[in-house]
Image (cartoon, rainbow, N blue to C red; front, side, top):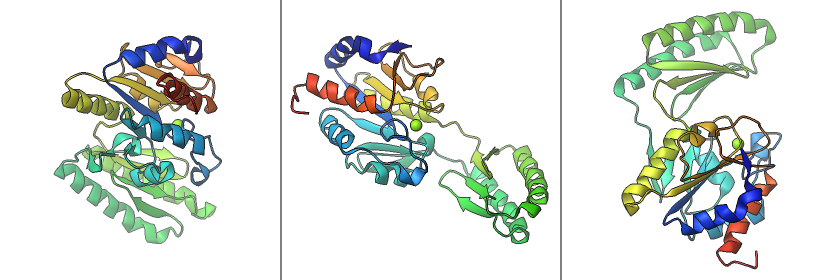
Length: 266
Ligand SMILES: [Mg+2]
């Protein structure tokens, strides 16, 4: 990876010469400083000002693992493109859309939730959260003494459900998340967005993608040498071409570009 600021003039020149650009940012740890809890994350006022100005010239998208409504509310800028749940659903120019789930998968989701709900009354504290694209079983509040038996039951149901072939399940921290077996990630959304503007403007836009997560690697991998991929942090292995040392520098990158475009009072 190359240090973005070492060759920043060339990058700005390249962007200025591009006939069409789209800017895509991850939220947590990219636009927002990393926070102790997801609720505490916020976007600094200066970053907000820069993004608001940037969107006057280019489409600006925020892609997050958060739910769509959550990330929209956290960023709070009207007229941006937002994608939630790692690209499962999105809003472009006020129009909502999402990955399509086929009827058989929908049925599988419903029957999987029924199976889980049947055992929940025996385990006070464990609960099911429905999401736009699937559901999660939370058991952080379950009494320690009940956990072993609960996990055995859960594991058995998980295997049963996965055998049917429509859903995948992943354990996280005291949570089991069920998701449809359909392909969506930040990469598929980024590709979708590029195609969206390519169709509209009859020219492939230069995509600028900035992110700090493992999930952002999916997006970096769909970009070409005619795009600008920027990893936030000092990780050694990333598919991004450039890196910037820390989150605060993301704002410098955007503001610097606006200055290049003639906004000297930033
Ligand atoms: Mg992040």
